[in-house]
Length: 401
Image (cartoon, rainbow, N blue to C red; front, side, top):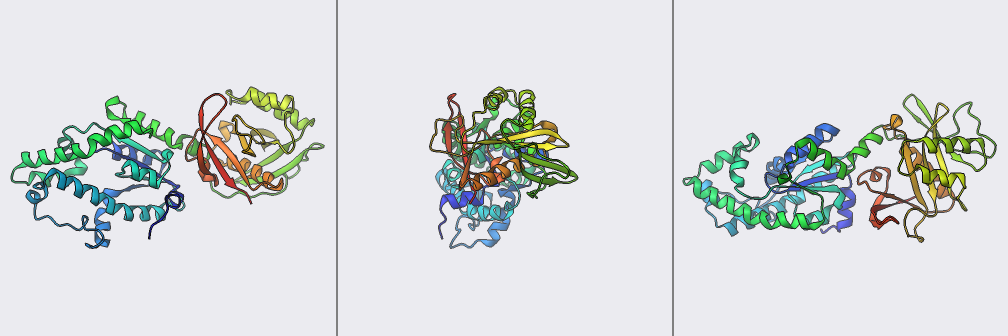
C-alpha cells in the first residue's frame, strides 16, 4: 500500500524532525528541547532492535542481514557498506513513520532521526524539520568517544585490523555525508552547522524559534477545553455592542466581545490598542479603529477578563498581502503577556471562526511567520506568501463549515 505525501504529512503534523549528519548534534539538541518543553523524544536508533524483530528478510533484507564479526562488517567495500546503510535506513523508516503517527496523535513529538532531503520533503513541511550539521571529517573517533556509542566503539575495536576498519568506516561516512552536508546547506531548509561555534543553549534557542516552540508553549499550554456561551454574569454590553462568546478556564472567566462602532466599549478598545505591548503594529490597528475602516462584515473582537481588555483579534477582508481573492483573514491575534498560557488566543480564534461561519464563509485564513502554532488550532499550511513589505510569511487555512 502506498500513501500519498499529503496524507503522511497530515498524520505527522505534530512531529518535529531533527536530522542531519553524524556528530552534528541531533541527539544533544533533541534531548535539550525535550527537557525544556517537556516533549517526548523518539530516537530511531533506540527503536531499531524492536523494528528488526518485527521485520522479515523478504521485505527488509538489509535490516535482517547478519554479520559474522567486525571483520566481515567492515571488510565490505565502501560502496557495499554505503548501499547497505542507505537501504537499512529506508527499510526502518516505514516502522518509524507508523510509530510516530500513533505516538503523536494527541501530543507533540520530537524525532531524532536520519532523513534525506527527499524523505524530508515527503513526510513533513520545512517548518517541521531542522538539520544539525557537522562537516564529515574523521567521524569515527568523535563517534566512538561518546558514552552512548560505547557499543559501536567496542565493536569496531574488535576488528583484527582496527585502523583498516576505521578507514573504511570514515570513507563510507564521508561518501554518504559530504554531498549531503553541502546539499542541505544549499536547500533552503533550516540548519545549524557546528562550525558556527554556537553553544547548546544557542542552538536549542534557534531551533525552538524555527519550530515555533517559543510562541507555541508560551501561549498554548493549557487544556484544550473551549466552551462558547453567554456573556459574563452581571456584565451588560453597551448599546449596540454584541457579546460574541464566553469561555471558561480553570478558575477564570474570559469573555470575548465583538467591538461595535461608536460605542463606549469601542473607545475603551482603542485605548487598549494604543497602549498594548505589540509595538510593531499597534498604530496601524489603532488607525483602523479611529477611522473605522471596516466594511461589510469586517470586525474586531476583544478578550475581557475582570472588566479589563487583555487581547484581541479581527476578521478582515483584506490584510497586509496583495491577495484580494483570499478572505476572510483572521488577523491581529494578540494577548498581553501576563495572560498567555491560558489558551485565550485559541478562544479568540474560535470566536472569529464562528463569526465567519455565521456570515456564510466556509474557511478562514491566517498569515504567520511561525510554524507549529496554528496547526494546534486546526489550521493547515498552504504556501508561503509575500506581504506588501516584501517579507515572506506562511499562509494557513481552516475549514469552518
